[in-house]
Structure formats: C-alpha cells, structure tokens
Length: 251
Image (cartoon, rainbow, N blue to C red):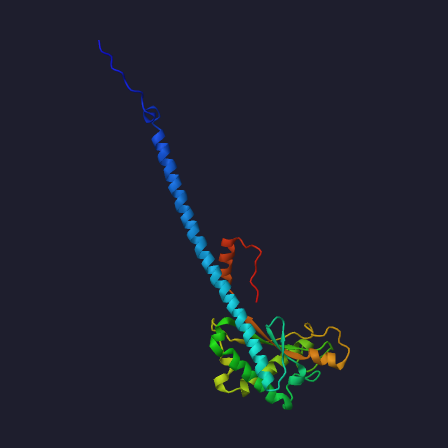
C-alpha cells in the first residue's frame, strides 16, 4: 500500500490575506515615494522663486544706492550740496539750497535755478539703465521746524510741510523740459513714480531746536526712494510654504 506524502501548505495558502496585505504595503510605498517627489518638486520651485525674489531685492537695493550716490555726486559737480540720509534711501535737500523761510512754502526766486537743476539731475539719473523698473515710488517729502504755524496753507505745520513739497513738484512739472519730465515717469504697475507728502515737525534732523540754525536744518525737502517688493499675494504664498510666519516685507 503506497502512501502519498503531501507537501506542507505554502504560507500564502495558509494565509490567503498575505498577498493582499503585501500589495497594499507596496502601493503605500509607491504613494509615499510619489508624494515625496511632488513635495520635493514644490520645494525646489519655491526655493527657485525665493532665490529670484532675493536677487531682485538685492539688485533693487543696489540700484537705489547707485541713484542716491549718482545724484549727490552730479549735484556736487554743480556746486549744489545735498546729503545722503537713512541708509542711502534719502536725498536730503537742506534749507539753504531751496531757501524756505520760516512760515513760507514757496521757493524764493534766487533758488529757482538750483531747484530746476536738482530736478533735471534726478530725472537723468533715475532713467539710466532701466533703473525705474526697480523703483516703486519716489516721495518728495516736506518738513518744518517745531515752531507753531497757523498761516495760509491751513492745518498748521502739516499743511506748510505738504505745500513745500507741492511747490517743488509743481515747479519741476512746469520748468523741466518734456524729454526729462518727471510727471511722465511710471513704475512697472503703470502708476506715477512720484508722489508728495508732508511730515510737519514730526521727523526732525535736530531734536532740540533752540537756535535759528537748528530751525533751518529741520526746514528741508527729503527725496525718499522706495523700491519694488514682492506682491503681497505672492509673498503670502511663499511665506506660507516656507513657514515664515514672522517675516514681513519692508520698503
């Protein structure tokens, strides 16, 4: 009588669920790999965008510094002394260059030629080498000393400082030739490049004002140059992807 030996059942035969479990694990591994590749691709893209923005900001800062230095140097050649201020973002025009008398917002006749030259030099310098593409706004800022004023412009020193900026801007619009006209300049968003503002006595160069020299230093015009930054929406996306919750773009 012959006996037939049966071979032991395979693991799969003993556990019919093993094949299904193996397939699920293999699928999960594939999904994990694909997800990792997608995430890596997104991170590379974000990193590329961040690097582009960083390079743009570096270039914009360089352009701003160059504009300020070039304007100051060119005016110096014409014996017009202006100053660099606030980390190379401001061209400071002191009172003895434009001659704003206490309580007055108009430019005296003897200073008109100087005012025109400043505007022309500014126009030439900022239009070199596509520099306007890196700029957002150029503010003509009026300032006063801390003595109370209630004259014709209204609103006290706020009105006086603003009218000083407006006086210079209007003079530039009228007297600078059309090929250099500052009012024709637009930033990359198509908005006027120049704007005016007044700060009254709130941003003094000399805090303690006791002498006429102190008052004169604070009566001035600042030309503040601001550069382009990432769009708010783009910045928020980048910030969210990078987890930079506390970072804030500044001008």
